[in-house]
Image (cartoon, rainbow, N blue to C red; front, side):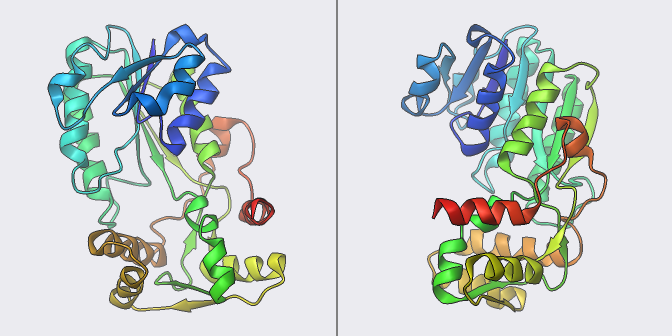
Length: 285
């Protein structure tokens, strides 16, 4: 049985789609907080198991002996490690065959504030003795393309990335890597640093956005504190704004760039250039 946590999220939905192309639905289960969000998956024969990661008792019986589990990192920054720990403990008790975890690029060495919970989770998984795979995902290109509308409206993209390069990939590409690992062989106790094949700077991104849209857009680099304040002014809560600004500062240091092309090797094709993602987003409006 393949069991995926967080399967109703954007990445999780791509993973389930990929699994269903390779294995029967009867071999796939999702562990979710809100089963109503998994109705479409249930209608296709996927087992839906309700869990609350803040209540470890709800994880009892979710995993079975010999299961292959994908722990998609939770989205509540600051609360993730105890939630992940509950999943790890339940997986250990059940005797799962493999626990794959979606971590962050170079989690063990990263200076990003986001990396702390990922590093702690990796350490807990290693200590559990469960055969593991760490899928250290880099930045999603959607982190940028989902905000194209305001960039075009105001003609500006703000950040603290300077000339740092970021090697993004699409959620689909990261999901395909997860599916390849879950359904493949020989991945036990491996660590994969996953990112797009070719990085870009935010000034390059903005120039390409301006070129394709035909509208003037400029990149404005701000000190980290000012970028956080700007995010808060448009409604981003301070803790998350600080985290995003810190990530941009890390980007300026090269923390979100990678040249290994491990992702493209896992999925069997080159990752899509960022210009393609911009074009697709513009077509979607």
